[in-house]
Length: 347
Image (cartoon, rainbow, N blue to C red):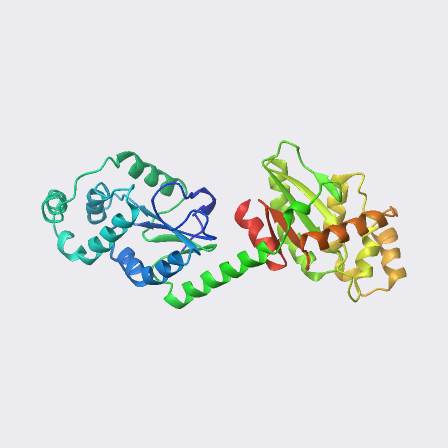
């Protein structure tokens, strides 16, 4: 499925038939059309699995009945007007019924579909015009062109994903959530580290970075362009904490940390990016070699920063950081390979 033009950030959970509790850790947002055979395939093949997770309180499904103009698909637009959004469980069973009988009503014209749903199924038309239009607008504004289009656990999928892949994605998403729950973001402070961005920003992001770690270099290369764009737009306030994981070789990162100019936050952020971009040039050096590289090759001045390093290390332990990088955003913490993916999804 080509997802290049789809904007998942613009897709919300407010519109649609909601199954499961609002505080479920995983969301499945499903754009479907009752006449589409591919949407039927997804719905019938995967509802048992998804319902299992809903019943366990791990998943909330948000089903968006998506009006389409294509002649055959537009027949479902008629049925979309007969779903009662105030009775989600009953409406969910009706969708199953509509799919089971798709070959019956799908062969009728639009007037025939209306007659079938009223006189055979026995339903009354609801006042769904506004919600149907809102769902349509949401989908079209964010690049949803085809049905089914499903947003699940950070993935965008259609009817082609198999049952086992979806189960794997659900399990991975739940594991990530459990890892995030091990953090204690209440122990975070803006007094430790250096801060870039406006006090009026929508979000405050905290990031812990060990300058020695290869994972830190990979994170900074991909994440910093995203963060700089968000900073420029005033969307985020970024608090960076340089710390050491205290295992073999990490003293080299501590040496580099002592050259970062905390008094000039914008400059400090650039220095972190440059230090890690040039990591292959200094990481194999001894203590004196790293010190000399910082002074002679990078042109940095020694700042000290021992107290800042110790404070960041202590705070990292208090909040549960065990890897670099670690990112805290929207009250949750993510570390290692999760840190980049959460920024890509939230910014």
